[in-house]
Length: 120
Image (cartoon, rainbow, N blue to C red; front, side, top):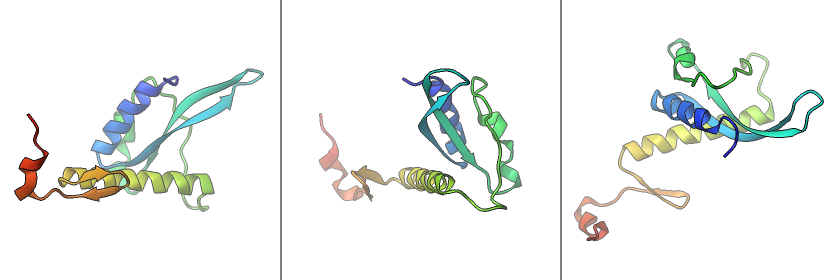
């Protein structure tokens, strides 16, 4: 378990439930004159004014690292994180619509064969 991971996962769950595009990643950083350390970073993307209340979704144990905007373009790292955040939103929507995950694919079970999946 990485430092701050439980706060990140709790905040990730809250943001995703609120419909915010977000993702988390394991990172390494070096404090000033210190050893290399591991941590987990939560990244939240907000696209309009109604999503600006992100602070209420973030666990108080997390440290706010910064805020940015896309006016000057996006770095490759941010593009990858945005892609992952959008995939998370799509996956959540599909699961809420009754789809199941089969590896990297999604499938909607046929209700007429639902009894085939019940054991016991």
